[in-house]
Length: 146
Image (cartoon, rainbow, N blue to C red; front, side, top):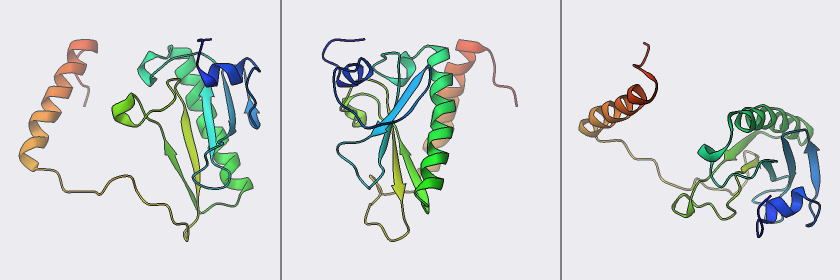
């Protein structure tokens, strides 16, 4: 638990939340600033500011819960779809610095819009970027297996 973290306060029972799911590694609760009815937040019990700060066990548990909670919310609310959103760092639009996923219910006629406009990548920039990232992964864990 980290002082000043609202999600840690929710985990500790020191701040209110409309909890909808809990297991040993995660909890899910309704957003108090919903983009749509049923907007649910999923957090790990482990405090980690950003996704890559999580332990392997917490990350795995978060992935399992994400799949389960998304499925139940989609089925129960009879949704047409769901947008799952996760942000890291203030430049990435993160506002609470405890890893969390937004599960935003979607209907075909809702008024939500994408947060960016798609553009076609410069083909000349993709090869060097892919090579740079492949090299970083190869240095970290060995060469890419194809």
